[in-house]
Image (cartoon, rainbow, N blue to C red; front, side, top):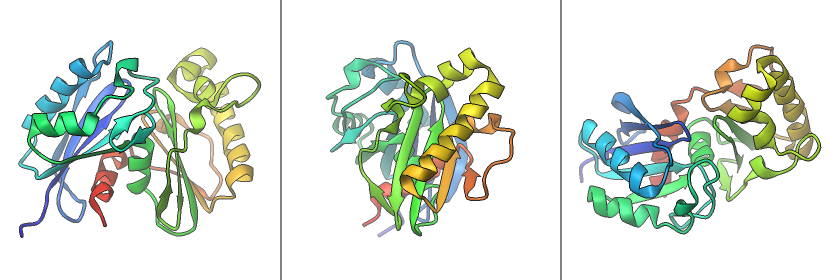
Amino acid sequence: MAAQKTLTIDIGGSGIKAMVLDAEGNPIGERTRVSTPKPAKPDAVLPRIVKLAKQQSDFDRVSIGFPGVMRNGVPLTAVNLHDNWIGFDLEGTLSEQLGKPVRALNDADVQGYGAISGKGVELVITLGTGFGSALFVDGKLVPNLEMGHHLFRGRRTYEEHLGSAGLKKAGRKKWERRIHQAIAALEYLFNYETLYIGGGNAQKLKRELPPNVKIVPNVAGLLGGIALWRG
């Protein structure tokens, strides 16, 4: 049987990215990107995914990173897209449109798979349009962790303070101070060996981070797609 090639798709609040990986999870060709439509309803987003797929090389299967809680390929939340995604059969619909098997998982979970070492307690947070999170223990995902909507600093949530809207409102320096406050709080909560920070806004962090905190490239949100087909 020929080695399987995986098309990985990362759906974000501002952009949709795509890349093909070989059987070992190495990139084949270049990453492509299109803007996320507004409003980001399924019938607007799916044609853009199909367009991205046609721009890539041949592939045998598809992995999707979706910005919301996922269960059996169906979104339970979609805060930064549109409510029409809730209950939508993402895996089944896209599989029909592309003619390939599809697996979908929360985008922070996928990014985590592309970043972690697989040893001990590892936490992943993503700083983008929203605030994503994923927790791994010895390489195994703890499912459906949705930390972004928990309270942080008073009556507002992690996402409200640390997502793109919070960055714009507070300014970069104040936003970065809040990131460091969150890092300290999360270490007390999870006692992690390593915290990985990804997402498009991670590169805006300029202050020195604790030694067990690492910035990961945004491409990890695509590279982790191979893990959806393991086992």
